[in-house]
Length: 114
Length: 115
Image (tube, rainbow over all chains, first blue to last red):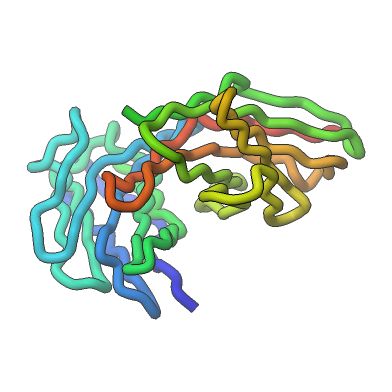
């Protein structure tokens, strides 16, 4: 059945490095991909919305040059956290929307920046 | 603008008792409403949704929710709580298709079921 996979499921990196998170839709085409982050004991906050083949739309307060989103195909979207800092440590979740307007959640990626 | 409010940070209930987790929303037009559950260090799991039709929606694990348009509420309920229901619960709202269909989540309510 249709699912969304995320890779890696967890990552630890040093401050100043860049980290790429992949989100793949399996058995469906994700026309829209939403990227959320969740700080400990907090809710999910929408970071950006991406449509295949076009630039992502970022929410207010989210730096587009720091959080690079690429949605090059209908089955793959990537989020790159550039020059990561400890305050970027969070749980990142992608949600893919199919052509039938059904939304599928990725399992999340836990990023820890030392 | 869309918004969701979960007025309770935590709900405590004894095992076997009924539980209610509250949610109110604000959205233009007819809303799509969702409940999700999150266990520690895990992603979100879908419980149930309301799009149209019967105001009482039944979902996974014995949960149900009632859509009340006049009160703009979508409270989550279960007749008899289990200790294993202890988790973080999120209510979410979405504008109907054709609009900007992003999900807006409430702050979350931690449910603690005591033996």
